[in-house]
Length: 425
Image (cartoon, rainbow, N blue to C red):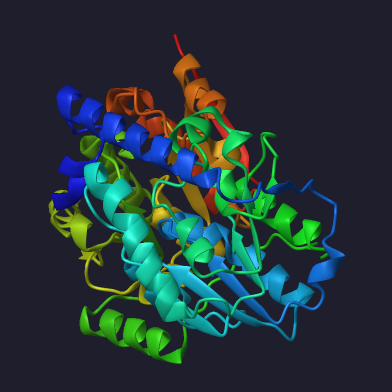
C-alpha cells in the first residue's frame, strides 16, 4: 500500500513528534480564534430540538473510510424518516462517492478531498473545507450534522462552519481523551454538541443524534445500494472467469485496510483458504481495493486451487454485489467486512487492536474472533479508533483453527453474533 508510509505506525519517532507538535500548534490557534465565536450548547441524547422542525436543507459530513460509511447507513435512513421533505446533502471522501452515489436517502453527494500527509492537515484541510463550503453554498443550510464520535482527523467540522449552517450538531471534543487533545476548541465550530461518552456501537451513537432531533430511529439495520448495472457487471465478470456459481463462493479479504496493524498474518490467510477449499470445495475470491491487489494476487496464487482476485477489479458497489453472492466472508476489521455485513453475507471477522464494541459488523449470520489482551482497553479509554501502540504480531496468536471453527459455525447458520475470545496464556 503506497500510503502506508504516511501512517503513524510507519512514521519515525521524530516525524511523529513533529506532526504532533504542528497539530498542537494548530489546535492552540483554533482555540484562540474560537473564543470569538459563541459557545456551543450541550445537546443531551433524547432532548429533541423542536425548533428544527421542519429542517428544509440538511448537510451531513462524513469523511471516514468504507466501514464507517457503511455503519452510517442506518443514520441516513432514519434521518430521512425524521425529515421526509428535507433536501439532504452528503459530503464524503472521493473514494467513498461510488458507494453512496445511489443512496436513496440523500439528494446530492459532494466530495471533500481530505487526503494529505498528516503533518500538513492542520494547515491545508481548513482551507479545503472553506472551498468545499463555498461550493456547497454559504448560508444556505438549516442544519448540519457530523455523525463521527471519535477524533476528527480530517477537520470535517470546518465544512459546516464555513458553510454557515444555522445549526451545526456533532459530538463534543470532550467525549474522549484523544479527541479532547487533538480537536481542542472544535466545539466552538458547532452550535449544539452531544456529550455522550458512553461505550456503545458506532451505529447507535449516530442514531442517538436522530433521536435528539425528535426521531424514533427504531431500526439499526445496515444497507447498501448496488444497482442493476453493478449486478450485471458481476454476473458477466464471473461468467468470463468461468466460475461455477452453483458451487459455494467464499470471499476472503487479506488486507488490513488503513493500517497493517489490523492485518492477520498472510500465512494464516493462506492456510485458512486451503482448509476451506479442501473441506467445502469452494471457489475462493480475494477481496480488497486497488492497494490490496498485489497482496490478493500473492495470496490467491498460494491457495493452490481455483481462486479469483477481485481486489482492484471491482468498484465498491460491485464488490457489495459480489459479496451478496458469496456463501461466506472472512476478513479483518476493514471496509469489506462491513460491506459483507450490509449485504447479509455470513461472515467471520478478525479483530486485533480495534474495539469490536464500537466497530463490530452487524449482519444476520456472523462471528467475531479476537484476542483478549489487556492493551486492547487502551483505545476505549483514550477514545482512539485503534491502539497504535499495538503490534500486528499479536494477531498471529489468533490461530487458523479458531477461525476455521467459527467459519463452520457460521456456515451451519447458528445465527446472531458470538464472540470467540482467546484468553492470553
